[in-house]
Amino acid sequence: TVFSVVVMVAMLLLAACSDSGDGKVIVATDAAYAPFEFLKDGKMTGFDIELLEAVMKEAGVEYEVKNTGWEPLFTSLNNKEVQAGISAITINDKRLKTYDFSDPYFESVNMILTKEDSEITSAKDLEGKNVGVQNGTTGQEALEKLFGKNNSNIKKYKSNVLAIQSLMNGEVEAVVADNGVVQEYVKNNPDKKVKSVEDKTNFESEFYGIIFPKKSEHVDDVNKGLKKVIESGKYAEIYKKWFGE
Ligand code: ARG
Image (cartoon, rainbow, N blue to C red; front, top):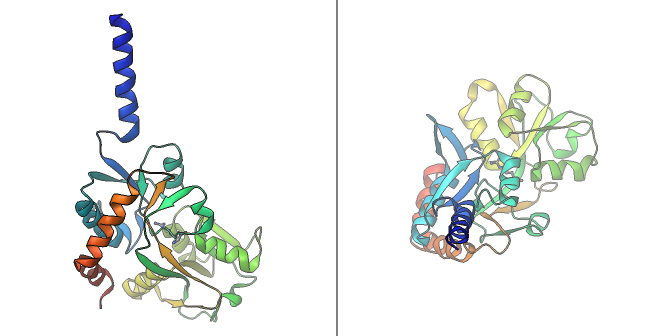
């Protein structure tokens, strides 16, 4: 009947919309992680955001970035509200159980941010001290590995910006986050009197990837795009802009 045809068309339209909006791939991010993704004059920018633009252009994929925040990035992938994520996300075994990743595009390692006058010189020195970390990050994992899962000294924050705020107001004595972010903060905030402390023994090298739901149709295209961006020298150009030589 006409009615059932109308119902079917409506259902098809609904299915199409819930899948990817107007056909664009929605890429989630937590734009509070400079220099990778952050807001500048209300606009999203950063290394990841510019790399994504270059990759999607090469891949011929129409996309839109959505600032979901960190933990909602993963839940939005789970419930199909977004089709990908870029957010300095470390590729690890735990995440690979639930998600697919692009090829790695950036090497990183956790690092300590602390006050200039702090006596902390390694991760071991964090023992018994309040340490801030963004909830659900590899920094949290690294701290739990060192000091135990339910250690009450590990203070978890919704965003890395909030973790750093708690260092400034004395709630914690250190923050653990990715080296790029810690070093950027030290460099750009001389007035805050903070320093970075590395510990290559206790913190392992990590690699960032663009994240997708399992079996995403976009992984191949994105990997091809990423490859072209690296080969063309565009990757080096973006890298240089954000990290220097
Ligand atoms: N690389 C770390 C991880 O994957 C931290 C990433 C946090 N990213 C962010 N945009 N807040 O767990």
